[in-house]
Image 1 (tube, rainbow, N blue to C red):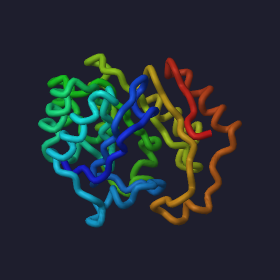
Image 2 (cartoon, helix red, strand yellow; image 1 turned 90 degrees about the vertical axis):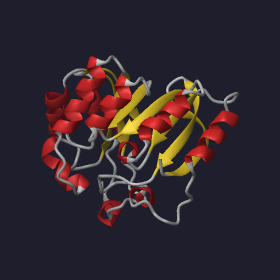
Image 3 (cartoon, rainbow, N blue to C red; image 1 turned 180 degrees about the vertical axis):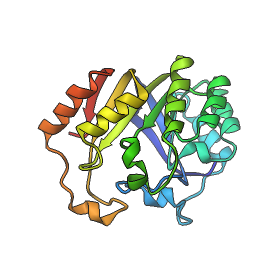
Image 4 (tube, one colour; image 1 turned 135 degrees about the vertical axis):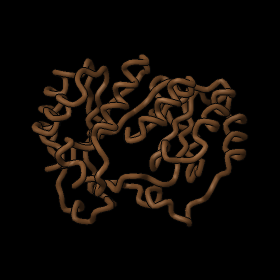
Length: 231
């Protein structure tokens, strides 16, 4: 599974549960504001944890945690993800998957085999700006397909957008609304200009609180619940 980092205890990453967070190496995006370039590039200097090592650790912590969060990088591009999730499920733990939504075929298999309890999908910006922000040419239709899968199979999920000035505006949120329709939970995240992959963003000031509150007001027109993280 290429696990390259572990946070043994988290009180905030799985809603309503204490969790262990597993970080996978490698990503199919190159987001300008990313704070984990070593994970994105699967840096050889990062520690590598074997599947057996991770499962043994989780088994030893069953009395402390109720959930596991698989994040990245991008977990859905890792080989052996289905078997790995199955092994975690056998321990009786809930699983949350953090994903960028660009692997709907893998997500479908995970859902059909009941290997996930909660999913967080990061929507970076509007379809029109995706290639500029992520340095890729992947189709936004993949994200739409992933969200449709979650809705159709009644999986708990949230959508997240980091509010990077110029890349996320009211017009961009309007475009996202038109693409994904109504959702239950949407989280806006404050942009942090420290240690971004693109050094030009170090000079970009995060939005003031009043702008984020305006964004939230709009997102509430298509999300049952919307909150802002990082203020």
